Amino acid sequence: MKEKGRKVIAQNRRARHDYAILDTYEAGIALMGTEVKSLRLGRASLADAFATVDDGEVFLRGLHIPEYTQGSWTNHEPRRTRKLLLHRGEIERLIGKIREGGLTLVPLSLYFSDGKVKCELALARGKKSYDKRSDLAKRDAEREIQRAYGRAAKGRARALR
Image (cartoon, rainbow, N blue to C red; front, side, top):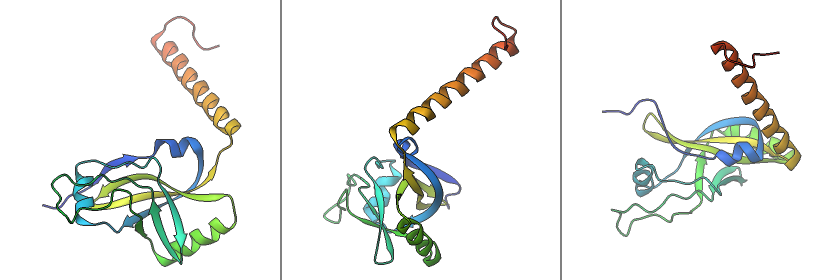
């Protein structure tokens, strides 16, 4: 029976906090059998992962996939460099945008899409600390507005002014 749909394995929550996301790409990953089996158990960490472009190819570095427990001598290296599978045109576009300066490739999530492992890759610009603070303030203000609407809808005290 074929798998259908999308099942998230791991997400990089810090990436959305530390970077301003400009564009996203979906890339396949060249993996070994024991890596896929380990991912099927939902074990992976994108905490220190990043992508680089070397000789016209895109590689994912720092992704941690723990060794498969039932694996034998064929087991994989947990933090090995893995090749990302993108179309030539997408790679050329990425190279052009990265050369503009100040941009980096960050993996946002790892997931199964119809049984195949995919990586959501983001073209991002690093945020300054004051950008992060303003984002937090904006989020808190939005949350407070939603609470006020909720109180008003229930007819409780302190309606909107």
